[in-house]
Length: 220
Ligand SMILES: [Mg+2]
Image (cartoon, rainbow, N blue to C red; front, side):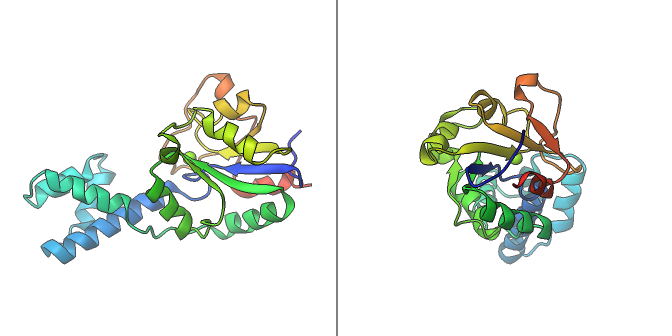
């Protein structure tokens, strides 16, 4: 049933599909830490990591408290985090599979939720800035499962069949399933930001794979 050939447009989610989003969070924390060292002379990297491990979701708020700064500074630190050039990279496996997909399919594209600049900085860091990217903030903030961008992809790659590869059953697969796309979920190896909890069957991907490189099995 699943096949990737010269008529297939392979559309890919970004976070926790092509690279682990936890690596982005770590990169952001390192960036904020460097900023705090250079401006306030305090190294709080270990503290920030500890707060996160303890389940603190507002670690920037905690940081601002620790530095005895006004809470408004937290907003600035949050933008520093969102706008930093992330230190993330593709694994060798993912890079190799993407090369094969690029060669054997009609087209590759990225469809991801998030802020335009943050997501484009991630794509640049991963060496994927050349791919067409459909980023929710650039589409009136219409996040998945909104079908708008999936419709647009179908218009942009007329005559293709479509596969969407992603990780989050809560929002990723409903729209492409309803549009007759093939959908493939990449199983969480244990460090995903969004857990793959049970959802309505209409939200399931057509197939789960254990790792991204398993896509190579479907290349014809
Ligand atoms: Mg994702």
